[in-house]
Amino acid sequence: MRKKLLSLIFLSLTACNDSPKSLAKLPDDAVVLAFGDSLTYGTGASKLKDYPNILAELTALEVINEGVPGEISSEGLKRLPALLDEYQPKLLILIHGGNDILRKIPPEQTADNLNRMIEEAANRHIDVVMLGVPQPSLWTLTSADFYQRIAEDRNIPVDLSTLPDILGDNGLKSDMIHPNDAGYRLMAGNIFKLLQKAGAL
Image: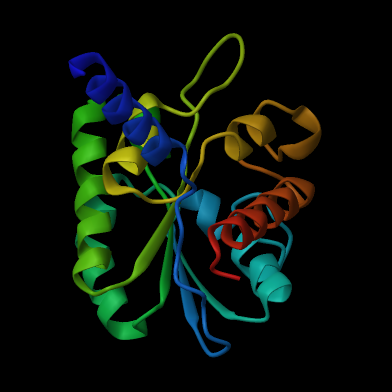
């Protein structure tokens, strides 16, 4: 009996982990806040070819670009609350922490700052999706481990492969750490798919 009970508990936990993260469907007049550093700002892109602009075209929604090149997560944490209050978005797209990785800021600090950003959104009933940023590697690029942990703990949709794939392909980069126009278009397209899969679109 005890063995059967343990099996049932295990199966239920596994089912919970495998269930897709879902978001509320965005109304036609929803505002989306794209928040981050140079990857959100669009460094390396031609005019209007940054991912928030392309995502706005794909979704027919207002997507506000609040990317600041060179920003670290502690600075982003200070900047975010006022923007959430100003724009009152229905969705926050969070892509942050890359400059922390480049500056070798302890990952625990970065994870804590990202968690607090997500809390700021949650306190205002704003949904969040996140993209993982890769750490430097001589071989295959992968998102830093803390992005998956945060997404699991917070139960938010996350894309861990898009930025590693783009930044691992010279044909999609404008320099070592930024996409080119084709890279940003792929980035926007994959975020669009993520939002569709999560039920936001």
